[in-house]
Length: 181
Image (cartoon, rainbow, N blue to C red; front, side, top):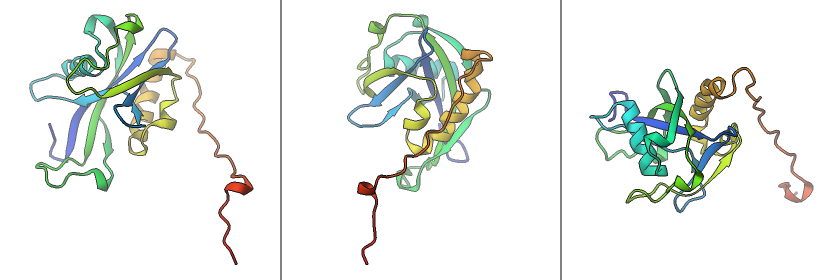
């Protein structure tokens, strides 16, 4: 479903374990990592879409997770110009997402990344809460930040860990580009 502004309705899923670590999946055949996410079909509620995507991408069923929270509003990101398919109608300029925070209630061996005919992920791992903000593709970073910031108090209460943007290291002399005279 693409709205009148060109945004595709989508759900995002943040899975956590009892140690408050998050599921971080590697997109199949790429060195790109993200949370599970997917489109909402016209006949689905947001929650139904979330459960369908959870099963398709991670192989988990509703009884294997607990919904802890959901973002209050749609969070939007705009696709970079090079990723917009102009030959499709209507043109999709980005995604609007509702994000769910889920606690995993089952053992890790229940995860099945090839549950669907077209798997999204080929590998996954548990990561610290703010880790995805450093690693997700740049155009999704703002949405990830908004979702994680909104949902953090649900998981951590008043003890939300502080997120510090890593300080870029100064390049060593061997890595500096020097203009020749």
